[in-house]
Image 1 (spheres, rainbow, N blue to C red):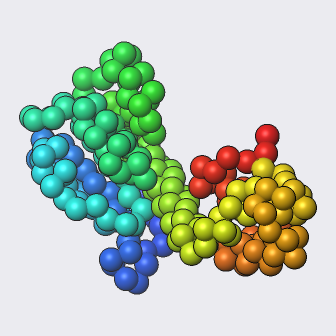
Image 2 (spheres, rainbow, N blue to C red):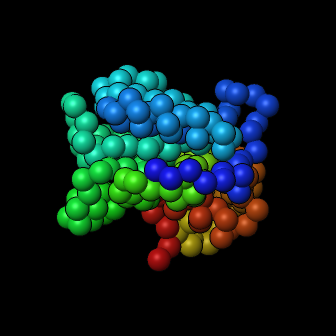
Length: 222
């Protein structure tokens, strides 16, 4: 890896280190780990290194933006197999592959499985740090969407059974009078339930409520 200026890749480091973005490096070559750690740290990210897939998998998941810089060839679980584990358990963690033995089929397989970059050694500091910056941004976005979904699920859990029934019909496009007929209640009662649904789900319009229902996986009008 060639050494170049890293200033353009520096990120803003939060004052609380517990929320600082983390770059995990998994490579069995100690010289690679020792060279990448100071480089990544100098760019403003926290760096944690591991010599094997098993060591990395034993690390508890962190709820902060992160990415994984991963060697393809490892002494235990190979990089592509570890990629599958990460994709299923830590979907908010993008992967950047590094290898000295890359070939086209391997690269295609890794990229199809969701890797954000596949770098063949030697690579420049600029290229690696640029890939990490992109991966961290993608991770932050994924975590944000995950947090939003948690809030939506909690709001939906707060609805009464009748409010859920009303919401299910409303997002399918049913008018108040049709909801009333379907549920055997008055239109005034439907309006009251509908108003509570909108407030509890923090929806400012019907279109917004339909979008929320879609994120929850609820059937809606096509």
